[in-house]
Length: 262
Image 1 (cartoon, rainbow, N blue to C red):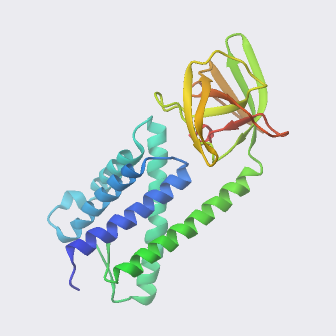
Image 2: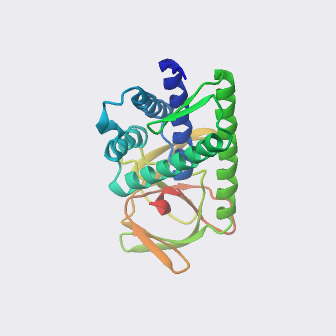
């Protein structure tokens, strides 16, 4: 099969972009689009090793791990080692899922338009079909993740205790995948608490964007928060508390899921 370098790069660029979108969805991260494009570009460039058998180091397990780390860090940045390892693990899971489907097609049907060499996939198919297939795969993955999150969300009510000086404030909180708020300087996740449950002097202003518009919330950094569900309990001080209106009878706060997923 004749392999065209430009097609090889473009195909793997879009595959890497799709993998990073899946990683973003599952990890509940919210990187900027430019970061996703940079990660996809690195993936596209790395795919060119299919043509360079003499670069043995890049083809080793260590070389692939290093490239994966570079891609993940370029997209999601470095916050702490546990978050980086979590994102890296999810990126690998996304890779295994997609490559598993590709290998299944190749082994069962052995189509002439697919070549696999040095663990790099090359598609000799029209670009429009590839793009439509990638879009369809992304939409299917998006639907699955949304259904999964909504199913979990039915039971994601947590007991929340906010420690502020000598004061302890208890309430129930809901882990909402729609809450991606972060304090812009520290990048700490934000818990939105009903303003009737708490009062404080604002330390930070948190900008937000929603379907209804955009604005700011007043926030402060607590001494710590303790979050528990059933027999599980954990605490963190890497968080900010913002006051707003929480219209629910079941809970008085909305968690950024990143707090409980690290």
